[in-house]
Length: 511
Ligand SMILES: Cc1cc2nc3c(=O)[nH]c(=O)nc-3n(C[C@H](O)[C@H](O)[C@H](O)COP(=O)(O)OP(=O)(O)OC[C@H]3O[C@@H](n4cnc5c(N)ncnc54)[C@H](O)[C@@H]3O)c2cc1C
Ligand code: SF4
Image (cartoon, rainbow, N blue to C red):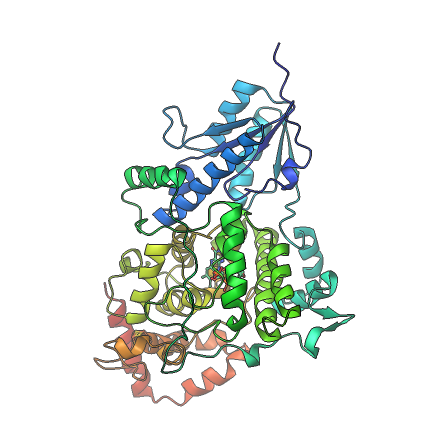
């Protein structure tokens, strides 16, 4: 007689680590893994081809690795005839077939998924044991404790606490180098010459597994945005480790300096491109941070670069996760600035005469990647200034990037980029005119618009919309001390200029 199944261990597409908490007591004699590819995960928001390919390929590689280790894996393929199309449907089927005594999983990265799996467990009167996700330095409980009693949440305070708790970049109780933050030394532009020569990061050629996924995505999701003609993301742990060591060797030393800089046609620059590997759990943030601090100790990378990089992972990444889980499910519906415009259609094609947006959107569709400043100060800024409904902006960001999972995407989009949470994530809206983009890139040199002009034929839409945003929201923003300078500049505009800006902004919004 077959042995009863003790644990059915649920492994989601972003939980691909054999050392995860869900697998900590896995017994091959009594337990099995459950993994499912379902259409719902690519359609509840429309997922771009690059993003779906990363997830499915990494899942298939992980399942193969688990089987090689002698573990039973119940795996639903996307194109299986009886695939129900939803995680709930596939789990229900597996429960009926295998009759597990208990379901075990690591905490998922999306509120919606957690609710749907809980419902299946409850309907089947099965216990669903949810274990802490040990791929983070902190727990959501730690964050809730940090947030308790604070009127305002700010990354800087949380980050310092994390440095103290972990001892990372610390000398006793003091930060190494006597400063918590080296922003003043960082964030240069490339000047007129452009980025210095830099080895291209390894792109991983599709193997048989990935190629099959690419074919599947191209046939089943032909109408989904983007292209997988160039696919090169790490989909195994070995590839992710190679990407990490190349980043440390070539890019980390100038990471801080060029963190915010952009250059036409240059996709990779000084960034790590490790977010998808981190979010799929092919890499653990502890090993990424350890590799960076080791480079500091070896004298390979300077402190401002290493601190800047560590802050992104030990600070921002943990912080946004805390915001997400302590504020869902209400967070997703917030729209503090009452923005109601539709997302412009060119976000799905890149067909626009605004050079900066064209470049950022093209690389997004071709690679599923754009660096932070492109997301925040090009696509995000444009949507914010135009007044696009934050939920439409959220659906776009969640669909197009290979690293997009709701716990990290939503607070970055809705909070940091669109200020829709009224200042929970960011102390002020990230608003700027086209002059910011001109300072940080060469885009404006090849653009038909002029970032210095806010009205007229050559006016840069960012500049027009920037002033229009301040005009529209002046009363609400007046309460924010960090907006004083910008509003003071607004007050210098004549009534005629304001009227002309408002008219030009309205004209720009016409479809
Ligand atoms: C509107 C918007 C949407 C975003 N959506 C996502 C998303 O869906 N998934 C995602 O992982 N990041 C998101 N980010 C944060 C950030 O832009 C990406 O993590 C980063 O661009 C990924 O590229 P990289 O790996 O080269 O990062 P690097 O610049 O090399 O940074 C190193 C690592 O730090 C972490 N990190 C950096 N900034 C942030 C941040 N603000 N929040 C959380 N982690 C951070 C990432 O894990 C990243 O890999 C978003 C930012 C904005 C403004
Ligand atoms: S001029 Fe304006 S639209 Fe053109 S690239 Fe510069 S910021 Fe973008």
